[in-house]
Every structure is written in C-alpha cells, then in structure tokens.
Image 1 (cartoon, helix red, strand yellow):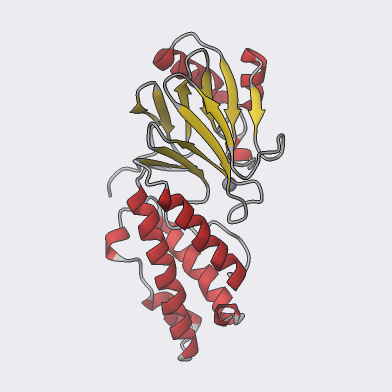
Image 2: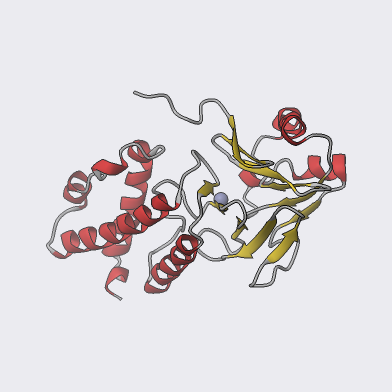
Length: 256
Ligand SMILES: [Zn+2]
C-alpha cells in the first residue's frame, strides 16, 4: 500500500510568501508585509519549536500578528498560546471575536485575506479563510476527505445547510483548498464530495425503502472507484459517512 501522505509533515509553497504545513493537522501562514498571518494552530503543543522555525525559515524575521482559527476544536488551537507569548499575536475565532457575516478583511500591500463565517455544518463557529489573490481557501473541517462534517441526524434542514455551504465553497473557485486535516486538494474534490453525498442519500434511501438489512446495505454500498485514493477514505471515512446516512434513513428523516 502506498505510504500515507501525512506520515511526514511537508511545507507546501502555496503562493508567493504563502506556505502550508501539510500533515494530519494542517496549518498555514502568509507574509502580510509588516507581519505574518497564521491559520490554525494544530493539536500538539510540543511542535512549537518546529513550527516557529519553519515560519522563520520561509518568511523571515517578522512578527505573527494574527492567528485565525477555522474553529476551536482542540486539534486546531494548541499553539495559540505560543503565538501570544512570543509575538503578542491576536487570536481570532468565533469564540474570541464577533465576525460579521461578510467577514473580516486583513489587507496587506500584496494580498488580502478574508475570514468568513460559515457556521453550522461542523461547528457553530466554523469560518473559512479565503485569500483571493492567491486562490487559496482554508475550509477547516467542513471538508474531511469523504467525511460528513456534521454529527447527528441528516435532517432536511441540515442537508440544506450542507448543500448551501458547499455551494459557497465551490463558488470561490479556489486554486488550492486546505482541509483541516490531510492532503491539500482542489475545488474538484469539493464538487466530488457533494456528488458522493447525494449518491449516498439516494442509494441508501432506496435500499432501506426496498427492505434491505443494514448488513446488506453496508456490503453493497462500496466506495466509488474514483475515490479510492482519497485520504483514509477506504480505511474508515466511507464507512463513517455510510453509517450516518443509514442511521438517518432508518429514522425516516431522509424522506422529509
Ligand atoms: Zn473539528
């Protein structure tokens, strides 16, 4: 089996003065002229030295002024304190700060970065970070390489929110999409996930309606061939998504 692309963290040059640290937990940083802006802050506090060195190596000796968290799950915030301590950085997320629906803009001579609330599919706090000049979009855990980002039943309201949210993400037409975890991808994967989600809803709904057992459904709804290479998809993400759709179908909420 091919190696997991997250076995070794890599620094991906994403644009001029723009870098992604791709690993199991992703983060990024960019040069804003007088300062550096960071997106997300990992799970492991002991990575502080390595991350600070990578930022200094790639951009140089500038202060980190802002750390933007896509949401505040523990695996996105562990270095927040280190950035505050070293640089007096301001931590921005929907827990610390009110962000207007239109977003908050960080303007540099060479680029703009916009933090846009997109709440409800993964957490109430979800924000995406969009850098239009670079075509780079951080989506946090709204995209999870096949995962359905929400817990709970897939009610009509939640399905509508998922569709609306993905439509907004796809409309950015980003060149690079940075998920909270795993390999960097492109808008094409967002489009493919929506197709996959709709296919699961329809296929599982039909199988339930025709009286198939859970076991028969799980055996017959196999991962689509073109998604075999998706990160950890065959290992568990497809099964996880399928079980959420199946539980919702059994509770009758897919008929609403
Ligand atoms: Zn999360």
